[in-house]
Image (cartoon, rainbow, N blue to C red; front, side):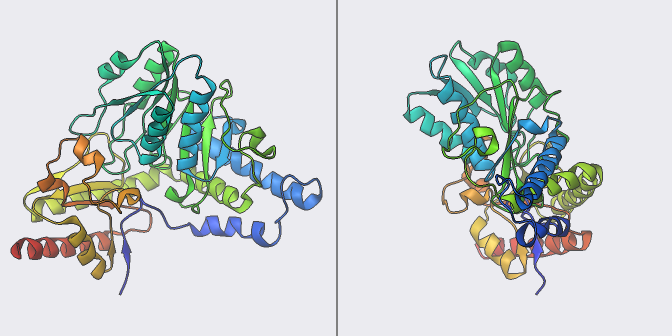
Length: 381
């Protein structure tokens, strides 16, 4: 049976061009980039070229990019690195209720260590209220962290406006852009973003590699002690193939942004239209005007989400009930709760996220299969 994959927000297939770019660094140019001999220097050149491609994707200097193991490490480093260093200047962080758990649980740790965190509400579309943000700022506020785009419902936040507010107030602004990078044009300079997290496996690079952008004028405390890698901010021998892969994926994303976005929007909008026409008692979650191009999040009234996922899996369809990082929880998604969804709808939520590998034929099969399964589940209630 053919597998049709519609869970690209959870992870993406590694692109063949990325694999080809990485391969020599496993078998030929395998030197440690901290070494002085030629094999090490070749690896070092590759790493710095990759760093440049990551920087180009978000319009920053390559020396403002620090390689990490992924979005979670980048988020932890951004929040803890700033707050621990500035603990005598203020211990207040502002974030939102719908952040990824890499942010929420980091904030929880900060709270356990005496820091204060304000969690902003969102509206029914998952968008923050800028007035509430301004009113939450105090003399103790050192950092605002608002995700660029939500991993579950796809809503894109008013990042440029938030960056402007932060700059005017003299507060640092971090954004978790793990879902947005490669799917939205990002310019950290124009958007007044001071720190940004991204992850390779969301854009066709391998798992286990990511990056953190930090404005060159900002100092932060490193979380890992050891050698002098990553300009003394991230110790440990470099994951050279991973870095090479992330760089190549960012290069591809930069060059193919318009084509990629247009394709995903077309598939998503076709899917939305078909589902609305064929299945009653649904709710589309997230903003329709400010949304990731490949994101669809729909709640089906009176349907058990886990049962729905299993039946789709039996038909060769991979989708999600929400965030892959929350799939082990029996509780309704914190994102769906925050936007006011009742359990009747929240429990039947399906996240479908399109990627470069998907086709219109795949999408038609998804719609037909999903329509039949929903009818079957509801008929047996």
